[in-house]
Image 1 (cartoon, helix red, strand yellow):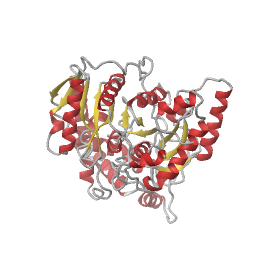
Image 2 (cartoon, rainbow, N blue to C red):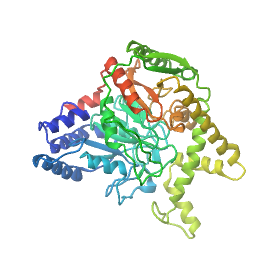
Image 3 (cartoon, rainbow, N blue to C red):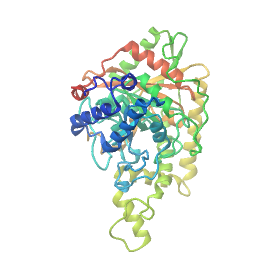
Image 4 (cartoon, rainbow, N blue to C red):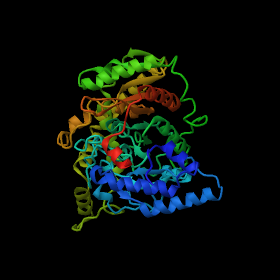
Length: 492
């Protein structure tokens, strides 16, 4: 059975109406993977037997008239740094190439409880460090809009899987833009929730004070439906927060944007922004105005400095978090060593990729005696100032509008040897993580070459409902055709 569209709500409704079984939906997902993934390389591991078994159980629940979950029958994918019981979780690294977790991450458990069906784990930059998915130790993922270009990162595999229409939902993680940037590059919707709204338990840590799990979907409504299944306080996560959620995150999406106040920072339109992206930003602001919103220029004076603070803080936390991978307890163990020190050095030298080593070294340096105050502590002070400037903005405005990336999807290999140029691509996204805010990326136009251009909407803490309403109305008004050649091929 070939399903015409890979859309979460559409697939769920097909199943609810009895027009398709969960087994048929899963079979169709694997058929699509067979057709496309030899070109796209979005997946690292597939769970065909487990998925079919789960689908049969869910179909049996329906036949018995039992209550089913919000994601019943929907096939989905999980980024490979989120633990899955009995299924490889490698973080796209040689260090964890054989690691099979003995437990599920909380979000995986929630997905299973909602009767979603996990069909595979997606490719990523090693330990979520990168912006192109070229840092994977195992394969390079292509952008379904142009296979020679990168899909973004580090959740590039999840974004590509959704853009290629193999699944309607994929989970990713966002430390400094790793959901939003690949969503923008691949023409899908990516939501980074408020820090603490979605449990991080079972997410292999990169930078614990910045990491956040979120959904990538084909449209905004699906993003809200996915968030419904993921939120909730988790006693297993010390950073988990109790949010005052009032019903579904899809409630109120149809409401007018009249009276909505939107801030457009002047710093987001300065040197370095691709002219085509700037043009889309201006058009997006005009579209919001046509929908009844007020758009005004504001200043975020510390926005440019946020990138420096982010890379110091995230690298320092990475240095600490990745210290556990020493060849003793788990992870890669070298064949040749004589002392304990040699075991640790050889294990890390052989198994970590170049980008991971670079960030560990930077973080270790920033935390070392004599440099802690000069670098790490100053970065934390700047983080506080960035958070404060957003709080000041949100006293007057409901959301902030800006680009996701200053550049369009670039050709594979173009920036791999220039880490600084790669880091500069995160300039518009990292402040959101430093300030622990929610943000959503959605397609708002196309470049002259036909590549999708994404914009992001940033909200106040726990302002996901307002963000989703604005994004939904904007998406509906723009009414873009977001099906690429690979996705159309998958649907034949």
